[in-house]
Amino acid sequence: MKELTRKEHELVALGAAVASNCIPCIEYHIPEARKAGLTETQILEAVELADKIKQVPARKVLDAAESLLNSAQQTCPDPGCGCAATPAIENNGCCA
Image (cartoon, rainbow, N blue to C red; front, side):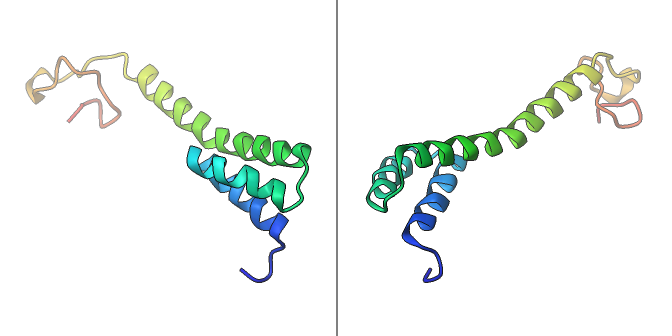
């Protein structure tokens, strides 16, 4: 990585650390960002932006799970399929 400045390198590393939920990475890269000359405000902004971006897919996963749970309120209409006690998942009205 010869094209990024040290500051840019640390901003990218902070974003990746937040996105991957890596505490040791955060513990390493925040001091490195300071050494690279980033201010506390810049570091905080980078961390907050990375977290904000990370929350979008996290929220989508939760929305998808809730949607599937809400759509599975009926039980399977075919008791002969072996899953009559399991909520129906969209598969032609059958859980199998």
